[in-house]
Image (cartoon, rainbow, N blue to C red; front, top):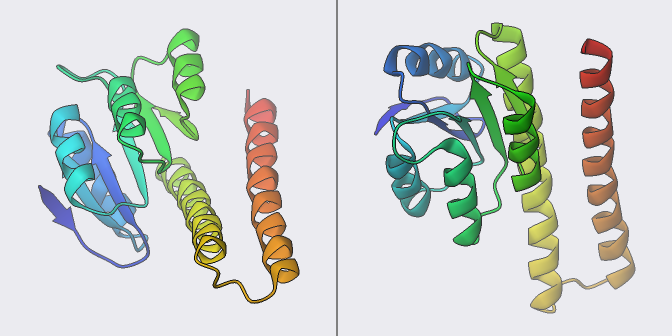
Length: 177
């Protein structure tokens, strides 16, 4: 596993094309993220089991385990981190399948540095919100939420923010398309 370090969030980048993966990893790391590289779906699954990541940026078409299969397997293992797919062979059926499986976004190769960073930042924001919600739920389950009303209000704010982020994403995609 190659790792480029910074310190905002942890990204697992999965691509069988090493040169492209290193270019993307460098751009993401320059924006404050720690990036780990995996050259296959199998390697990525091992890393996901052994390390804590905030999001996955994965190619779809790879030898062996595809990015879609990686997403399915990670869900089967109880992992809920955001997946973003990047592909040079994007067709509407593949993109629909990726979204159906739970992908939060996608990019088509080639993409600009700004597009890449924007998508990674949005996925990271979703990850942070999911973690905040999970933390609040854990506190409630452990009886650690002293004021249930405040807890529920905070949970509602977190969920509303996720909805707003998702609807803004859809509006942006429609206006760009």
